[in-house]
Image 1 (cartoon, rainbow, N blue to C red):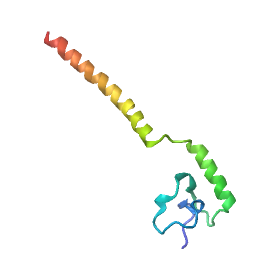
Image 2: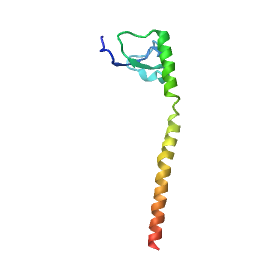
Image 3: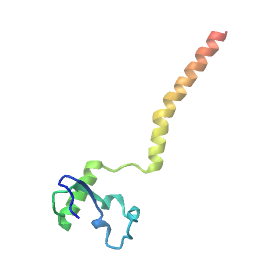
Image 4: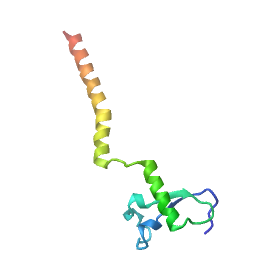
Length: 95
C-alpha cells in the first residue's frame, strides 16, 4: 500500500514479529517509533536510534499512579484552600 509522503507512521517492528494482528497494546511504548513517511522504511539500526531519540525527547513519564497523585495535588490543594476561604468568609459574615 502506498502512503502519501508526510503521513504519520507508528512503527512496531522493534516490538518483535510475534505480535498478533491488531494486538499492538502488548508492545511496550518505548518500542514503538513514530515518524513521517518519506517513501521507505528505516533500517533496523536507524529505527533503534530513532527510538532512543524519542525516549530522550519525551523523558521518562511518571507512573499513572504518580500522575494521579500529582493531579490531585495540582487541583485538590487549591480547591481545598478556596473552600476553606469561602467557609471562613461565610463564618465571619454570620457573626
